[in-house]
Every structure is written in C-alpha cells, then in structure tokens.
Image 1 (cartoon, helix red, strand yellow):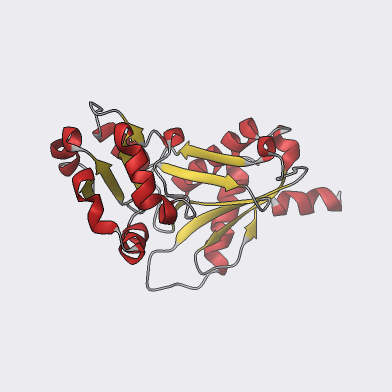
Image 2 (tube, rainbow, N blue to C red):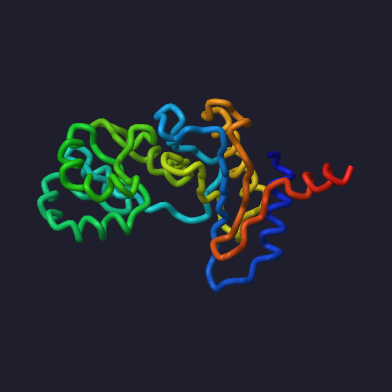
Length: 226
C-alpha cells in the first residue's frame, strides 16, 4: 500500500458518497490474516501518532491530584480532582464522563484510586489512562505536550477480531494529509505485526456514512488483465 493508492481510494470514496450535512470522518480499515488472537503476542494494541490532525478535536479529561490541578485546568477540556472521586460512585455518572471524552490521562500516584472509581466503565471501553500513550504522568509532568500529542493520536486495537479501524482524517481535510495519516498507520502496523506485511490481508477507506473502497483495487485489476 502506497500513498498514490491511498489518494486514489480517497478520491473514489468521495465520488461514491452522498453529501451529508456534517463533516464525515475518513476511517481506515485494515483486515489482518495469519494471526492467532488467542495468543497475547499476536494481539495488537498500539497508540500511533499521526503527522497531521485527525480533523476533529480530541476531548481529553485529566484525573489528577493537587500537584497538577492548576496546570491541568489551563490545558485539558475537563479536570477531575482525586478529592472529588467520591462524587462518581454512581456508575451512570461515570458512563456520562466516559461518553464525553476521547482520552483520559491520570497522575501516576493516584492510579489505584482511578482504577477503583473509573476502571469498571473506562476499562471495557478502552479508555483507561494508558502508559503506552503517555497518559499516566508523574506529579511534576509537563502536560501541554501530552495534550497536543493526543490530538494526533489514534489507537490500533485487534484483540478479539482480526480487524483494525481508526479515523485518519475528515472529508474537508487536504487529501494529501489524510493519505499521509493513513500511510503512517499502515507502516506502524507493519512494524508491529509478527510477520509484517504478510499479516495484512487488505485495506479499505470509508467515510462515516459511505461505502468502503479497497485501497489499491485499480492496481490489482490492472495486474489481473495483464
């Protein structure tokens, strides 16, 4: 899969999709093969930093103690202090928080309390603060670079099904930027997978309400006719 093939798929995706009254996202779908997902070493869970914006702002909530309170309130979309965790005893309140934010960051020394209060909801949704994304921070951390990095971060996850789907941009973005984002995800996965490209079956691009378009489909058709 190369940049030209991705750009061709982007153009075709736009051509076959109806115009909607909202800014649709481009999703990259990668089907995997040759993996036994029952084996932990074959499961994929990676946070990938894209070279360009995803086109939509990621909302980030900080779960911190007094040490980071002032700094966090000037950076994140919402801040919940550890002293106020008791307000979230009702699971419904935690679900509301989970629905409102894309990422959660947490101060490392209060992680046990974070897990007790929010883990039952954030865990199954894959939103618990994760060291892999740099979202578990020291009490003296510089938070602004983390917030900016999360605006360019996607999670590639395949633990129960051999498929990865993540947003790589929006339809109003420059097609070149969307293509470079998609290629970054693809190349990152190639380096993570046990047998690299041999574990990738095929890849598709689609808009939120559109039909999937296979990346490289035209090139494959041309090969078959020769």
